[in-house]
Image 1 (cartoon, rainbow, N blue to C red):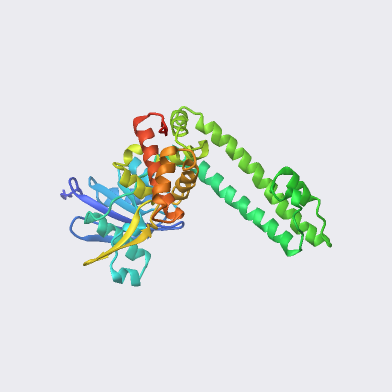
Image 2: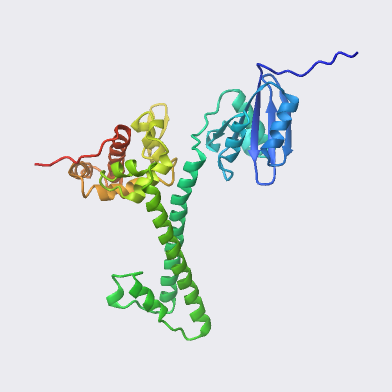
Length: 356
């Protein structure tokens, strides 16, 4: 009888770098001491897991891929079958100059696997699926509002193109029902012109109906047990509405994951970038690295809060003595963020200071 040794990688670690695309994944597999293989496979978790179990039974599997279009479902699926997985910001992956000059899928997945083995990667926070879906509702609404704004601009541009002036009595009531009825009553010189204008108007009315439905769903979501208490607490902070509160809660997931105000402000993008070398120390302005959904939101809220909170009014007036208002409002946004953090962390309502 032949003695056959069974493969057993118990106690060993296998590192998997993944460059994921819609139709295929590039996979690079490294052991603790050498590169095993780099190959392409169908975009299915089961194919990768079967390969790992077949070639490295008993090992500890660690995988990584870059955040992108695929979201977090790959991460969740790998975790469910026992593969440790992290998702990284592409900008945080150490890259050699040669790898920048010659970029291919094989190079990218090898780079990820190598950096994972070297302990150079820190994964981003991955929310649970239910939170991602709630966040999608807010982001979908924002996208529809942007489409609506673009549609409105197209209608106004078309009116300007043909010299159609808005009546004085409607100048202050843009996009009211009366204003839309006035546009609907406009008749161009040819049928083609009427069709063009009506097409834009139909799109606008369609978007308005969609946004109305999303607003209704958003209000209903804010009143569920999961969000109701925190929404009520956040609304005690000046400048925070139900929409803003829900955006904050779905984007942040949990305030506890930010150890300090500095880390929270960094996530919002309310910190300066610096460029230091030797004796030179240059501050290059507010950082470009941010959550794009949140920085604009908190600055808009700061403009409202600065008119309502006496303490913020005093701070804003003081800051404006040595910088422009647009720069001063960023400082106010950070102060407002501190109030938001306090309310969520301590589960207490915000009480505005009383000026004697």
